[in-house]
Image 1 (cartoon, rainbow, N blue to C red):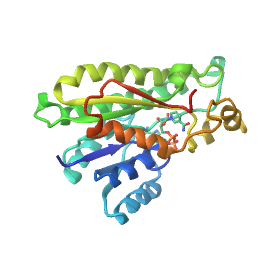
Image 2 (cartoon, protein in one colour):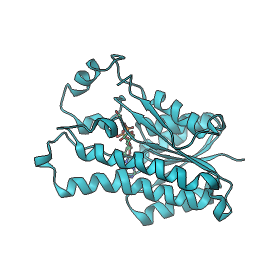
Image 3 (cartoon, rainbow, N blue to C red):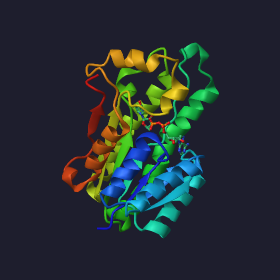
Length: 248
Ligand code: NAD
């Protein structure tokens, strides 16, 4: 089966590392991005210079029409989707609940939850045996925050990731008979730009000091788990969660 993957939010961070590793493993990769075309193109260029195949696709995953158009373009230019990585996510500055606005809560939920649902929906339409598809696999990128709740910091983000966990469980059961596996990774502290917008100075060091492994993780360490879950090596794994949180 030709392997075609879509990675959302792949211009940097965990998505970037995952797109590059998938390409190394032979997938043609759709590199989704929101704004930074140059960064997405640099991922594509790196993949192509390594002998792989990739295209950059601009789309806001919270926008239904843009998601539908993204999957159409991916199919037209790379072929039938076999792997989806729901990775694009947002995290706002730390806040107690008294200061959470409806606008912020809705923005977080629209990307971190609605965006994941929309991409899963479009992927199922392509992969499902019910629709004549050949099956496939998905990985949702959640967070250790879904278990820990992120009290006093970003309970909105944590709740959105709780929804990602439940989406994974429910969808895995719904589509298991149709040749689709759905799994989830829950990173802890991973060194990416997301912390530039989400935390006070020094937060990363404070969190790190409390981790059993005494260090944060690298995006490539998360990418390895995602790629394994998508691979045939994980052919009997669905509805499962891998925690990548240094023992936390
Ligand atoms: P990041 O900020 O480097 O990457 C996130 C990417 O998603 C960015 O490129 C951003 O532009 C994109 N994005 C945001 N909203 C989008 C939208 N509406 N449509 C399309 N793209 C959008 O952060 P990261 O750490 O690589 O995060 C990747 C995933 O990992 C996220 O879901 C995040 O919640 C999760 N995560 C990260 C950590 C961590 O410590 N870095 C921990 C737990 C979970």
